[in-house]
Image (cartoon, rainbow, N blue to C red; front, top):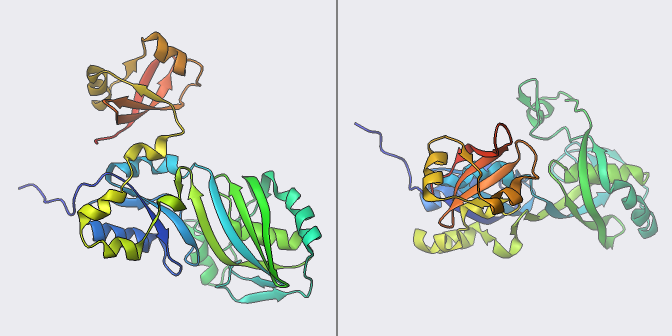
Length: 311
């Protein structure tokens, strides 16, 4: 006797406006229960104190999460000057204090040092694994996990408001892997003081933004699954920044069976011939995504299936 699948097959993306105090995993589990979805995941963890855009992948969309998290992100946060905290945010205990409060001119001048490719040491309280354990687990146990500096990309770092003597608000546009808590910590140090994030909101992840987000309360108030699914975005939403190539039905069947497809049409060759070996292309048929594929140039130009999408 075959096992009964738990939950319904729902494929697509739901953008949640995460409330403060919730972990990203708790939000995923809540959405999964509300929609009775068989499979769900999220694109990019948000700290419990953070609010804002948390894209939830349902069903076949979970196969595109790796591409979603590569997208450019935007954040708004407030720094509290003069207090260093163990977690680099408001939840940690105070570990150092400073009477220094930077001026607007000092802040604007310092921001220039944090643009482009910069080196950043992740916070001790992060989900990075150290010797098989999450860094935050080691930190909570009283250990001091050490992280090597990593390069991250900061496209925009702008002072939005001097809230008062102790607080300033900023907006940041960045690439994958940049920690806002680390950015706030390092900015404060560069200004001769210390500081931590007192509030944090994510404004967008790639194509997913606030305008298309729905709160958990609103999702629950809709009352039935059909109404909630009106907010569902297509699986391919996370793939908008990678090239797409239309296949015939025969080619699509070959890809779905795990076999490569030779690229023969002149227009298709023109689209991808200049792309490097191994770059990703979304194979489409009938307006639907068929698979994530990688380009192979030898012995002939081909698409090799990586993740088949059953939508």
